[in-house]
Amino acid sequence: MNEQACTTILVGKKASVDGSTMIARNDDTFMPITPQKFIVHPAVHGRNETLTSGKNGFTAPLPADGYRYQGVPNIEVAEKGVFEENGFNEKNVGISSTESVYGNEHTLTFDPFIKNGLAEDSLPTMVIPFINSAKEGVQYLGQLIAKYGSPEGNGVLFNDKNDVWYMEIVTGHHWVAQRIPDDAYAVAANQVAIQWIDFDDSDNFMWSDGIREFVDEHHLNPDKEGFNFRHIFGTDNEKDRHYNTPRVWYGQHYFNPEIEQDPQSSELPFICHAAKKISVADVEYVLGSHYNETKYDPFTDSPEGKKFRPIAMNRTQNSHVMQIRNDVPEDQSAIMWMTFGMPAFAPYLPFHANVSETDASFANTPLTYDRKSAYWLYRTVSMIVESHYADFVQEDIDYLKECRMALGQFVAETDAKAAKLSGEELTKFLTAQDKVMVADMRDKAEDLIGRLITKGLTLSKLTYNVDINL
Picture 1 (cartoon, rainbow, N blue to C red):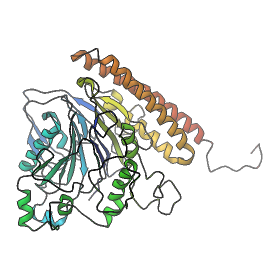
Picture 2: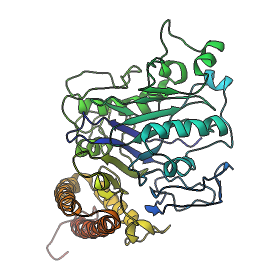
Picture 3: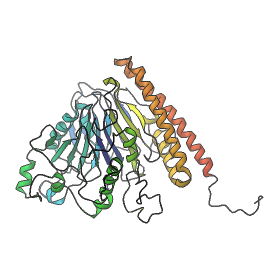
Picture 4: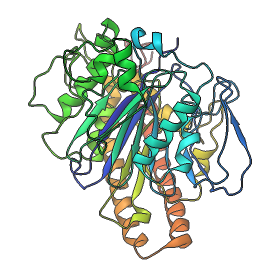
């Protein structure tokens, strides 16, 4: 089986520095090159269509009416599936789908996966155009899983201006979801993450019909008391301790450096409270991390530098932070910060939700290398920096700092101008502004590429100094 390897971060509005809700994820794939594009689907009315997955044969009718929404699909969809992954709809509801999770054989024995059920490749398309809130997203997806079943384990992230929800589907039909408390954050990494479920608290927990009866009937609960979803449905093995739990540990280490924990612990908490307020930049840092400033960093000479699978990898196809702000007018409040490059080396660009289309460099990604495409441009930046890491990393750090400052100014200036607009005029303005931002970031990326290639020409190992004329 091809391993999927995403990393998820969720932040409640009182845990963030500016009152935003945030859901974030590295979209990692099995192969290092899986080209994607970023597009906007228009709203539809009176449609009569059926969705059919090229990946597993899943088929279902699409509702007649659907909201405008963003998607970040694969380019090759015929056999690999669409995989729209992440985006906002016009109601400012965000989705990021999915964090691959793995249930254990004991639970799957009694509720196996459904081969042609609703999989990751079709899930965002089937959900995000049709929901009005994060909680409704969980409810809507839960109904689809009850009807069609699931062929795999998936963690799905939802947010709106008030709520952040994380849903874990772990067998053919069973799942739970937890609302992240406003003052809390959570990190998940390819392992069942949710822990204790309070079945008397429907405001903060949701679950599949009959899940308690299913667990009781098949004697699946190993604990003497309570209902720990991770213990019952999750895995706890050697692979987890090298591939999964260390990523959760590092995220918690960054947000709570005062707490000592074992990176291989099976009991790292799901719900956490950070030592300080969390910013978009903090989330981006963790998603772009490789155990920075620890002995587990693969860019060091430490003998433990390759012990654990890092968070940022060359297999990260897109990394995103879905931010909904509460300090600006609602129709300009949702921003998706996204990079197509490796998040360790490439900047996150802020894309507004309230737009009618995306820049052609993001919307028209070719299958083969073309630096006019944003996907290939930012992967070029990443490859060049990593190829001479020790020599290039400081220039990359300076470049990213310059980008973050310019993008912060862009958002602030756009907010001020957008506040005077509304309706179609506002949508048109934000669409144009995002294209200006993309062009500016392209210039900065091309400048960096030129400087690094020029410097790289002096770093050849085929050098032998004997005489000035040789």
